[in-house]
Image (cartoon, rainbow, N blue to C red; front, side, top):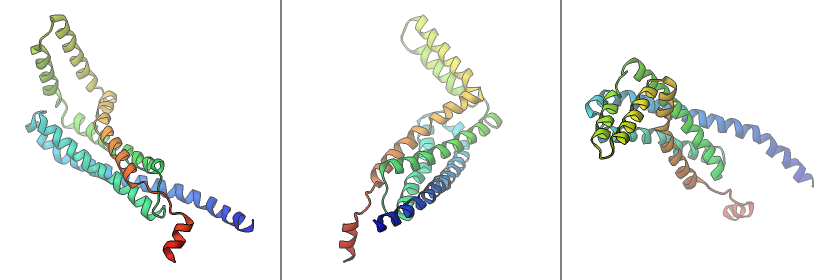
Length: 203
């Protein structure tokens, strides 16, 4: 009975430390991922005009996004190996990963808002013009084509609103970060070693 009551406060005292280190891991790797995302965005922007919204632009952009989200994997692994004694649940790993993802996405959105409204305002006009031309050349009734064109133009107007622009921009990286978080949490999850097994290993 004495042993159990002595060990209980010990585990409770560790809880605030675990929470603090959890937040520190999320913040540290989130800031690194976000900074990397912002730097790569600034580095790829000069090439975007030449790519003219083609497939190469998508490949270039999403390659940069995936690279920045590799910090999700490293952040979860760092917490598991250095803080959690080599063990981590899927839920804890997911919490760390999604926290890093959200911070990185915030950097991504803020960077694009600054670049777009200060240096590339009107950059998306050619994209929307291409979409309108594509809709007008597609088969269908005049009413359906007109409705499609009106929808595209409405989307273009919304994109000029900083709030909706930020929402559209957030949608770009977040699904990638969510997917990498799920994969990383599944790969890195590890049950704590039982006391009997650890005794057998050290014997």
